[in-house]
Image (tube, rainbow, N blue to C red):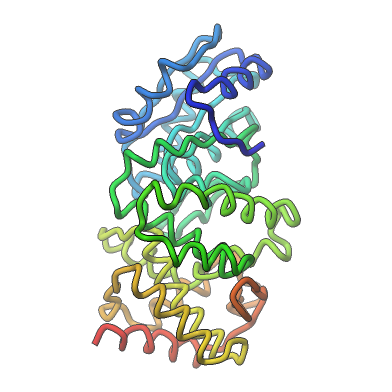
Length: 347
């Protein structure tokens, strides 16, 4: 179930009442503890005992160490299989919380309350949970669906501009792979601000959910959601390894520029369409200097991507605005051309 929360959180309370959990755990990070928990708690009505668990904010904490700490807390607090975990946070909290819930005692129930645009439109939807390991993003994880995804657009008012822009990249991706009107609506917004973005959040969530519903385990069409991520994730992982994190959405924007140009090189897009897409993304997102990374370093990480098979790099590439093909095998020479194309954009 994906639903917008009413301002008094009635739908959340009704849903919790139906689930009748033995205990409730609310997972937050420092940011959502300060900005979002004070909105949730006064509106939470339940007879079940509940505990708030806080983790440190940031992608660097989405790891096995934090997961182990959470398993130990669940054990100490005698969480059972009728317990409920509420993930109140962005993508790190929903990814990590979902992973811990889906593995503790072979699975306890969880609800996602996404608080960032990125989590609302992408990370909280689709049942992919995961943690990073050895600088590889989401390399350990499960497929596990939350009981519900309940979003509250007013949480967006607590975000910095950079976080909004990061989520906006995933919304643009949804338009490029599945809905030309959505893309056109988004690139026409006056500016990236909650009041201008809010009308389009539900559509982005629907696109993600429609694709996932067709292919939960990512055996075919769900792969189109990886557009922009094959190169984007590799670059993001290199910055993570360096200890210099970049926002996920900015890495995806870089990836979409590169993979749009790749689609052109593969004959899937004509030069006019690819140029328009690239110019629109460039206008909205900052250039990321990747000149310090060798092409071979980036490609090594792409070969390690869990979506690859038999030593081939599989891409999802758009063949028009609103249309995408998956399992497009691309050779190393074309990838090097694309990386050089991006590096030269910064000159």
